[in-house]
Structure formats: structure tokens, C-alpha cells
Image 1 (cartoon, rainbow, N blue to C red):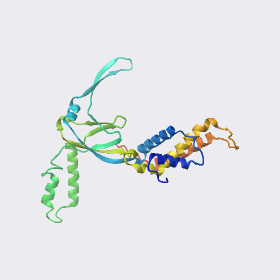
Image 2: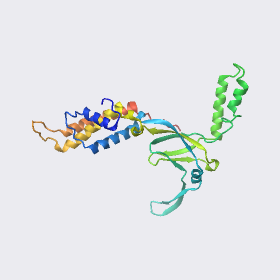
Image 3: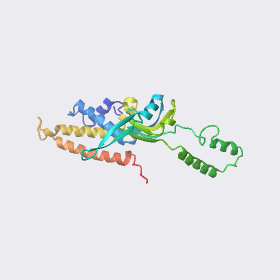
Image 4: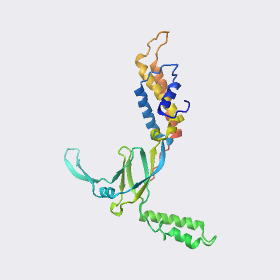
Length: 272
């Protein structure tokens, strides 16, 4: 199938690119499964099409809030000389996230203020008093006022400070949990991987992924044949696994360099 839409279809495509069934590709099925898993992981971590932006909603329960406020872990610090130095405590103020979440941008504000919400918020009052008169509202002044109000809102109710690490799948939120009530909804702005097993079948037909996986198959094929290097087969054919392996290494360098230059998001600048 020229456009693979399944895991096995992708494997068959890569084998055909290497010459199967005209040639016998000496790769074990378990090796191919491992290479597909590694290629998908690399694709999800580096390719900009490997993730998608989503908004997740979670209703905080009374148990969640109680855990955030009361649950602590204790650890003892030890100096380089082996002497116990101090006892440390850490609040377990985290929520477990699904495995497919790879990054969290922010948590939308869970509180309300008269600046941006409610019947008597300032935005509503500006429109109520000034917008009846066509042309009476100066757009520049309105934009500057809105910017000022947003800055004021960030000072009064700052954004939720979060910490997240993909390896632990824990979202830490450093806020005053005594001010949060049960049944409050929190919304996460985050990124999740495009997992083919959950309906994102188009990943299997990605042009870069097909080239990359074919090259990794070729590398594994050559690596499997290295110990038979120079062995002559009936008919005068001589095996040269090392040449196949080295060719695959060169191809992978070109493909990975293309990923960094064309398909990988550039790192964000650090300011301050």
C-alpha cells in the first residue's frame, strides 16, 4: 500500500523500499516492532506534526483539594561527609495527567474578577456607556484601556504557577488551595502526542517518518549481517553488511538534519 494507514502497513512499506520480496530482509519481527516504537517516539518528541494542542477540563473534587492542602512527603538531606543535615517537607500539590500529555502551557484562571467577568465588569460598562454613540469610542484609547486592565488583572490575580515533567506525568500547581472550592473546573492548555492507536492513523503516512523508519530498518539489516561480512554465497554473491550499515548511518544523518531544520519547532528565546 503506497499510503500506509496501519502499523503493519508501514512495516510492509519500509520492507518494500529495501527490496522485499525480491530480496530477503534479514530483520526479526521483534526488531521491527522495536524500531517502529522508537521511530514513533522520536517523531512525537521532535516533529511539529507529532503533537497537537488540546484543552483538557477537570472538575476539582473535595478530595483533590484536601490532598493539595494536607498531604506532604518528608525527606532527609545528607551532606557529602555523610552527616544528616536537615529534614525537608514537600506538598504533594499535583494532579496526575494522562500518559499521552507531553507538555502543559498554562492553566486558565479559576477565579472571577470584576475586571473581566460578571454583569458589572469594566468591559461591559465601557460598551454599555460609549458604544451607543457611533464613532464616539476611540479605538486606540479602548485598546490601551484594555491592555491596562489586563495588566491590572494579572497583578491582582496572577496566572497559576505550574510545574510539569513528562517522565512523572504530574502537574504541580503552586497556588493557595484554601481559596479554591470544590466543583471548580480547571482547564489546561496542553499538548498531547498524535498516537496512531487512538485514531491518528495519518501518522503512518507521514513522509518524513516513512523515510526515517526505512533507514533504521536498513541500519538494523546491515548490523545483523556485519558478522557475515565477506561470506560468499552460492552464485558468487558476497555479503557486505558493513557497507549496508554505513550507508544507513549516512542516510539517517541527512534525515535527522532535515528534521532539525525543517520539521522541528525552534527553541523559545529566554529573556531575562
